[in-house]
Length: 471
Image (cartoon, rainbow, N blue to C red):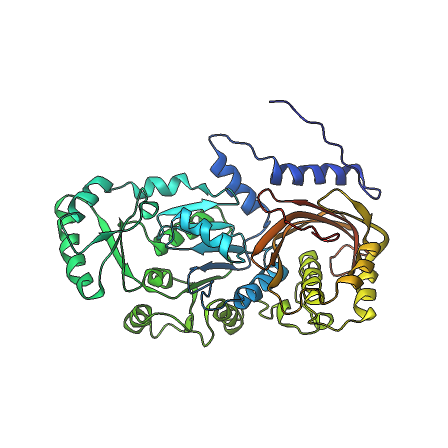
């Protein structure tokens, strides 16, 4: 393969050590090449960036838990996004645990403003993957192969006319899925379980949502997948300080069975989960039934259990009033793009005070490189905002950031990488972004100044109409 030479120009003096640190960070994130141990590589990068046990690990179901399909503007989800990226992404872990197959999971990501998790558990706990590329956990596959034969499962289940096979995308290596009417589910489950036992298999049958029936290896399931991860972290000496599990339906019940975790059943939890709780965990004070729906219920649980900050920056009407604990460069990124959205939606006052405040956080000679390659000063970009105030008022327009990862590259310099996403009408576009901050002191709380910003379009998410600033 032909190698391409890349020149990197730094906008201000850096020590030689800082340059090497920058190159190391860039290589880790963007130059990961395939090899037989790729799973180990990706897992290692995710864990190494924490530098200590995760302050909080959130393990959340998606449909009707993290994602509210009745919230057309996705405000609950966007509130969680701002809270996570401003306060937790840099030192915590986000895990999505869904019954969806990889195909349906990817479809949901295109439909909703979801963050990128560090770990994804899919197909009712039968698949564990890591990172953006969703690299599978080989060890988990070996666990699930024990006393499992998909062909035998399909053969025995075909004898039950009550079972209607789900789409081919939902049939996975360690999961066979059907639809069955609620009044027939118990009878079918009992008989099928016995038939498979007689064939020498050790399986688990999960009924959820009043219609979905999944057949899995006995060692599979959302709960077992989480237990596997926790044991892996414990063995390596960095178990999460706190873990919060979140769900709404029967296939989430196992998550709440894991010892020493906090749990939240969102307000809209289904009867099957509430009944399980009443029969198995009603005296467990570490599990609550939230009074808020979906992601808002997760935010509520963070505050209820005192797991960390629980005031999303998006909730502040005046972003100048937004104050966070554990200040980090990621918060500056979240705050700026919330300002950008609110300015264009005319949700804040058209005041020079706001623009002056943004300018005050930028070096007078700070530069910004637009995804088109056009370069100008950040001050000029901010001045240009005067002409777009309120141009998205009353329209479906949202901006959020994902994977905000700050790294200190010398005593007073921070490199922040993130993805900026924009929903404008029916169009969704995104830019891979880098910002360099300079700090007056050696802590990020010692006032950060923007030095340089750079964005490139993410392939497949280029906009039809290009704004002259900030993607």
